[in-house]
Structures are given as structure tokens and as C-alpha cells.
Picture 1 (tube, rainbow over the protein chains, first blue to last red):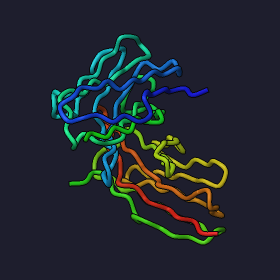
Picture 2 (picture 1 turned 135 degrees about the vertical axis):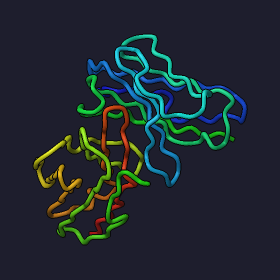
Picture 3 (picture 1 turned 45 degrees about the vertical axis):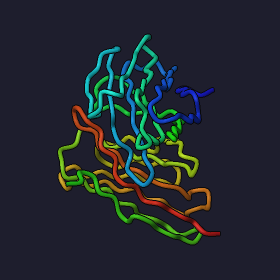
Length: 114
Length: 107
């Protein structure tokens, strides 16, 4: 059974629209993260949450808003979508302590903005 | 500048050959993790190795903190090893991934 679920697997959106990417983890972790991987670019760290609180935000744009309704959920809302937002978005989790904990990744959501 | 550099950028092997992948970092280290990214995109954690040497089957990871480097050794490569290998450096508030080594193992 998958331990980190991301939904949907593929997502196509039009420029200017809003989408929510879903992430749920069943590893009992208290820290969750979002990463982005654009074509031909390294994986980029976006956000970290610990005990449902934002710990670090490396995303310049306020169009990206994480939402944590439950301890094991960290969704990503993206507003006013742009073609440059096209990427695969990965959710990850670990025990708290970003500097010293092994991270586990979900399968990703591939977003295409037309 | 780039905090985490991986080399080589790409590597082609014949099945059965060994590979040595390098990861060099320019900042202080809290943890080092190696990942395998499948051609379809999913990430598999290979090693969590802040320091020292760890083994898993045909894979060996060695991290030397004072030299600011980590390596991944693949012995007796197989075609199923093809894919991208990523190292990730975690400091207190940030995780930085390297650009990856794309490995192709030919039959």
C-alpha cells in the first residue's frame, strides 16, 4: 500500500485558474514538505511544515499556499496559474527536524498549465 | 553558487560494470540523502547517510563531512539501474538537491 498518496497524478489547467494538489501520508510523520521539479531543473524545495505549522518557505510567490487540515495532510493550493508553473510537484514527509531526518517522497503530481 | 554539485552529469555503462557517482557540497551539512529517480519520475530513497559508509545490496554510500563530499558506488550494474541518481543536502531550514547523474546501463 502506498504510504504517501498524491492526487491527482496528472493535472491539466488553463492559465489563470486555480488548482489544489492533495497530499496524504500514512507513515506517522509530523513533518511534511513540498518540492517542485520543472523540466531540466533540479528538484526545488518549496515548503516545510512541522506539526501543521509552517517552518520554512522558499517559494517567492504568494500564489502557492500550503494547507494542512490534518496532521497527515498537506495540500498545495496554486492560484492564478501560469505556464511556468508546469512541473511535477512532489510531497514528502519525515519526522520533525529538517536537518537530520530521512525524507520519503510521494509519487508526484504532474501539472501542465496551458 | 550551486551548493550541491553532482558528477558526472551522465554516465553510460555496459551491464556488469561498476559506477562511482559523486556529490560535492559547499555548505555545512546536517544530513545527506541519496535518491533514485525512475524514468517515470518517482523518487526512491536509497540511503540516508549523514556520515560514514552504508551498504545496501550492490550499493554503497560514503559521506566524508570534513571533505564535503558523498559518493554512491554501484557494483555489477544492471539495466534496471538506469535512471537518475540524486543527492540531497539538508541544513537546518533548507534542503538542496543536486542536478543529478543520469545513468544508462546497456545490455
